[in-house]
Image 1 (cartoon, rainbow over the protein chains, first blue to last red):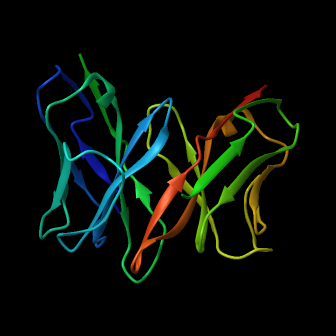
Image 2 (image 1 turned 120 degrees about the horizontal axis):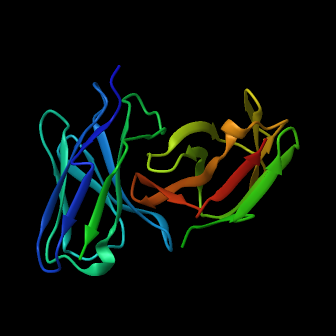
Length: 113
Length: 113
């Protein structure tokens, strides 16, 4: 079974631009969560989607948004990029049936110049 | 606010030298505690889930244990390939019937041959 895939793997943007990251969960998984990982703050929860609905949200500004499609694929968008948004963005999916385990993708490395 | 503290931040061992990593947590309504391993440039890889105090899980040279306030990841006779960052995360209620994961900042383990 293929794992969680994320595209692109690397991205360089400049301040003020916006960016869209994509995540395809493991086949059959309907829950997708997004995290930001930085050396200083570690892994921080952004939001979770289940059946196209945002089910949970972390403490990030409104510049960070996401959505989920009917095939469970998810995208996250960051508008008006700031230097501090440089990070590894990780997507994780969870299997159905009440399992709490999240399986992570390889991440998208975003650099904001 | 849920808090997860991992210690030490970094640990250097000789091959075969057993040790333990600590994860202490403060959370309301713990649902589960997770251990992940993360290699450089990759997403976290799931290792264990623990749900109740006294529970133990083992996988090869790793054993995870859980008390009401902390979890330990014991590494027996480590090998260089065990070198990685080990992340601990707690899952707790975030509102309504939703849960979220809060991660510690990790322990960077280096095993020298």
